[in-house]
Amino acid sequence: MTPTEFTPLASTIGGVRIGVASVMLMLFSGRIAGISGILGRLFPPFAGEDPRGAAAFVIGLIAAPLLYAAATGSTFAQTVSDNARLMAVAGLLVGFGAAYGGGCTSGHGVCGMSRLSLRSVVATAIFMGTGFVTVFVMRHVIGG
Amino acid sequence: MGALASGIAGLIFGLGLLISGMANPAKVQTFSISSVRSIQA
Image (cartoon, rainbow over all chains, first blue to last red; front, side, top):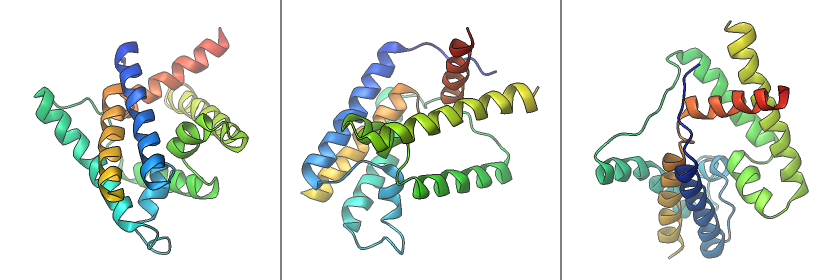
């Protein structure tokens, strides 16, 4: 297993930023900061609903690591599987799940939970629980 | 104004993901394993 550091301060600062960004988006554009939904608004058949706002948000997301690297002088840690087929299948499953469930981790987990939406609480509990079990099975049952 | 605010929100959101480590799949997976272990304990 890849060890990662316990970073409560960084996690708190990061979480506050995510929360502030979600409130900002809701305040100024009246939209939920659901990343899958925002990305979906850039492509048909959902394109047309505030495409400029959606594009601006995505550009901001893409600019974030560049700004981070420029400000800190270092790149951030990111470990991704080099199995392209597995990543493609996983991406499709995540996309299908987000579309079918009406939101992803950000839409349900960040925005929905903070709005005390029961639907989002249930969705988040299910996808987090499924994620925990999937990681456990992949690493300790299949992966050995 | 709306697009500018959306862009700034995206930037802050992305920085939040980076700073918290949630842009690193390895850290997210380790969090998942730790959660399963704490349930088992």
